[in-house]
Image 1 (cartoon, rainbow, N blue to C red):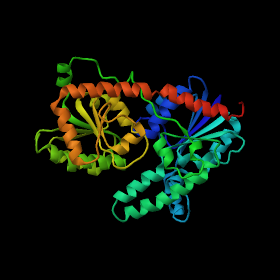
Image 2 (cartoon, helix red, strand yellow):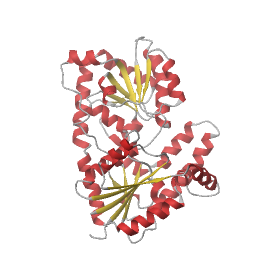
Image 3 (cartoon, rainbow, N blue to C red):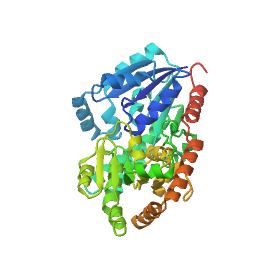
Image 4 (cartoon, rainbow, N blue to C red):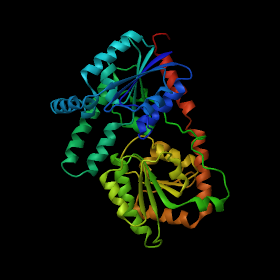
Length: 400
């Protein structure tokens, strides 16, 4: 099958959830299909980036977004009902170029990732199309609005309303729809939302694999008590990092004064960088191999308070046999069992108690870490996930 894929950005480096999802889906799809990949980009990609992306497609087309047009689009958005992020990524010249490419290639199926790409292909009525909502963006914006201070709270609330309307309207333009979890699907307010297929993320457990070693050697390699990872300019991750340092660490230090924390991930915001001034806290920024962060920690702590979707950071940490503590919000999509594959708690006091319990009992860390890896191996396979996606494509293609 010839599949034309439209992304809002180049799926490399793998520093954001949408990039990771797209990259691994493309990697597996390419084994059985011809992939024509179309990406918008705000910056000129490097040769290394292009070379890495070409590994997961047969043909690559990158459409440059002009900065002045982005600003103009955002101005126009003030007088529109469409979400600001849809306006941000849409440019007419890119649309014209993409239409010409679709006409020339005559793909069997068009796959658009995220609402922000839907405008480019929604009216391609001669072709079967799938839209990957990925997350319930409107719900994520709602949580941000409730936690933000004025005037950001008002801006986020307005964007939430636009997203709810757009998530419903765009539904009708695509034969197939997918989303990352049942929890996210529940927050798409369309009467036929159950028609949206659940296509989960996966984890490469052969890549994310902590070396089997005896307990003494593993403890010797652990340089930090706690670890938190992610794109550190993304609001939910910024909020979580600040929360760990300001709310949980002070409770831990009442009993364990020397507790250490590593915050690892790309593009740390100013607020995250400032956390490095706190004793025992290190902010690494981008790491060439994020596994190095997982290898040097005793506990992975992800107390997510806002955001949607399946947390890839939890899949990675669990695959690396790292015992995990997270919030009920983050575990709704993951669906792991509290006390068996990870620990779930929502207050700083409970989280501090869980952390201290694991720090005091290395055998519990070993047991929880092993159970976590077994869980993601059984439930989160990229191969199985992509096969579900292929079934959607084959059910509605011009050659089916």
